[in-house]
Image: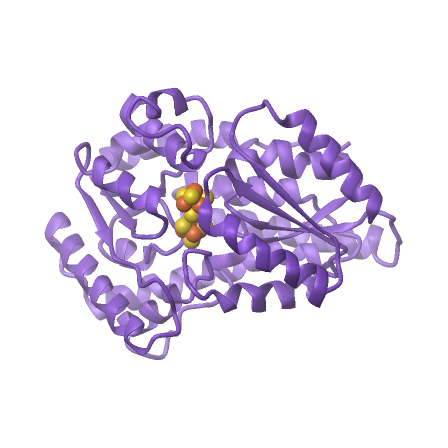
Length: 382
Ligand code: BJ8
């Protein structure tokens, strides 16, 4: 069974603890911006003196509320996020002064239109691919527009200096988080994938960024030491698994925990619940808006067509993390990841010659038994 540290706090606990913290922020007069995606240039929000908070729903609880307005056959992440918003069950949504969304998948972008009736919502138009020359100029114009919107909304002038400071701080944070993710490269890993994923996703509810960086740094050091003293050189027969695909917040237990309880180690994540956005730092030496444009345009989500960076990342991660098998998680009705899965499967099985399993699921518990059986059969095959 999965071993977690004594002071481990689960995601829901961290989310609840954050309620009071966000209330305190508002009482201090700090503005809050609700966000939903790894394409959001958070540095612009920090430079405006506001705090970004992720509003992606990870629970099935508000889905029946969402289904009163939205189709049933929609991605659970979208329904959960929308359900929290309309049912007033999410203090993070309640305390948000405005929302920022991007035209990523169809479901999300149309949800933002409706959310605009509840909260002022600024929608950034994301280019559909990274390879066209004009994509950079188009996305840069969208960043400049967001800058203006934030300046107007929060009555602030965002200077280059403020942006450079925000970029520097976020780069520092990215390096620390990456170092933590990369503990999975150690063999055997000194930490479970479940802990990595929970700790990092729960960070979204910690608003003292330096304190959170210190906490992660300490835990990384502690685990590196544990590896050196207790684990280095020891062989295990647990397969090393990489998870790719959609965000995992709403299926953490039924996928990550099941894999690890079934005798494998989840050592790497190629998804937005992993280092997808953290791998590239923002260039601190060039114009800050150009640097942010370049950085965020390069996020390798399946909403981009073509999406070669995802395969490049998969290629290097599978080697660096010594992966024995890949499990792709598709949230139901996520067409972009679901269609791209065909190429991911071919890449993993034909080019990398490793086993691949695709799990399509939602936030309910109905398929827990079936997922368990499929994961166990897959691991036996490895
Ligand atoms: S950068 S993965 S956070 S879009 S799973 S809502 S794509 S139908 S969450 Fe995502 Fe940004 Fe991409 Fe990351 Fe739509 Fe798919 Fe649902 Fe998704």
